[in-house]
Image 1 (cartoon, one colour):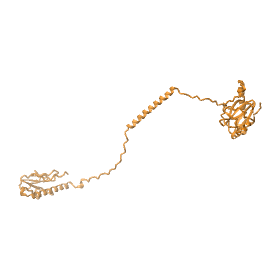
Image 2 (cartoon, one colour):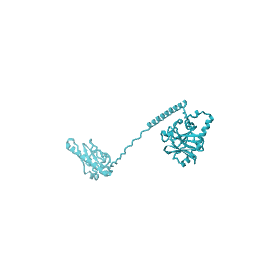
Image 3 (cartoon, one colour):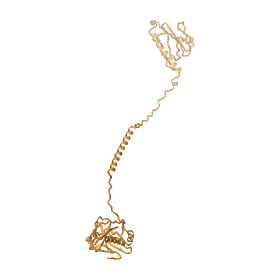
Image 4 (spheres, one colour):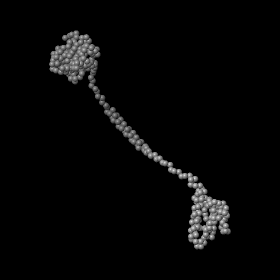
Length: 352
């Protein structure tokens, strides 16, 4: 049968030989839907919209020849944009066929695309002189369309869909080849891994030794604030040098008096010793102030304490008395020595 434009009709597709991977199904999903299955007849070929068993959002258009009761499958191609087709509309204005399925989504296929799918399959079949049994063999669809058109069936959507889907690209399926590594490559990977582990171990050991050899950080010492110690007063606050000499002289005088008292207590007749202090020597010898000469007689000898100028000796014609020959000055910083006896009187004053 040959017509100038496609014709949409419905037939009983219960016994249709669906290709592998496809099935007879509509949006209604009922047995009666298979008995009134929508098809398109154009230029001597019949086009069957079949759904895929994996429920993908597309459908397969199976091209057959012969009668609808005993069709021969010659070609199959995929159309996207709808599934579970239950209504077909033909639009002569833009020469498209709209396949409407689930959720009223439509996929438009141009007339030229339908004719090309049928004529190419027919020419291939005639050149190979295939038998009718071979032509009726079901095949899995090998061509896939990459364009997707979604929308409601209308004249405007059909026109835009027809212009964009003039041809159906073919996606070739090829089995992936698994690359295998040779024995040398595997050995190289293993050896490289071992070397990397050794290098990392050496670096870690060097870093550990370096950290161990570093001196520890000194601990912070607490800051101790000390208050300054009080300073000693200057020597002027303790008195002048002259006052110190007077104190030393008074101390010697008190010791001498204590010694005289001790001798007097023992008695002069017992030892025959006498100590005489001439207080008037300052008038005869020219002494002034506290520089009084002292005459001490112990046993048979006499000693005179004179000043630094070597004053006159005591009167009485006592032998052994001279000008400062055996005397010592109480005003000088040198120790005072009493000559003529075995018992020294007093100690040396401290240095000034």
